[in-house]
Length: 258
Image 1 (tube, helix red, strand yellow):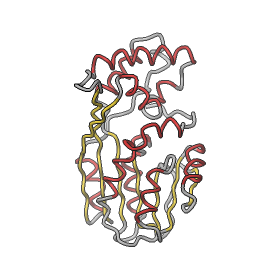
Image 2: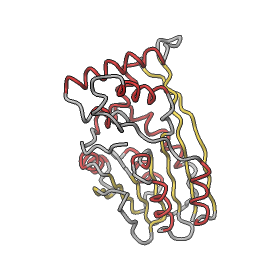
Image 3: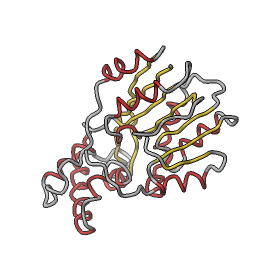
Image 4: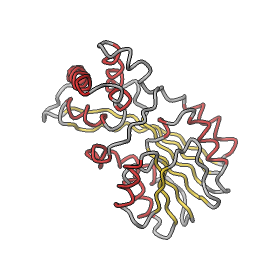
């Protein structure tokens, strides 16, 4: 998968803020910490997940990091009680005394992310928690049709390698993390989001999974790509009784206690 250098769009990302924040709430509910000293939100985005962390532990030092300056700027405006920094988790190291590293929908973008997860877990003190959620939807129609649209158009050469890789098997994560953890819990949750038709699905992914496909294209090509993608989506996601379509969205959750 090619990583795009184009900055993220916080406003586009937040069009589906409630749906995007729901996995953070579900992951946070499983974190077995009472009074952590330092809490870090990896890939904090516009601060919606960081806000949950600060709300649960108001006395903790809460830090959010993200590679996007635009996201960090908006997060800092949203949540002045927390600290925010532009940083890349691929090379970032937690401060001493960090009790929780929380990552919502970010590590799927990080090259060799299993090794990064193990490095971060090793950096935690005894009892520290690594809590991670990643979309596991590369085999869903939404993503298969991105790759299909990319391969069957005049932009095929430009978009070679744009598709995100499939996540490793659950057992691989377990075998990597368990030697450094007293407890490792791994589970999947399938969310079914009611969307306003195929264009809404495309709009959802424009701020995330579609970025590597759209960034290399000029304005005219982007419009044509999106039109072709939406046409395919309309066939794959039929309207339900109320006119909505259901976007099935599997996500992988990992909780490791040092």
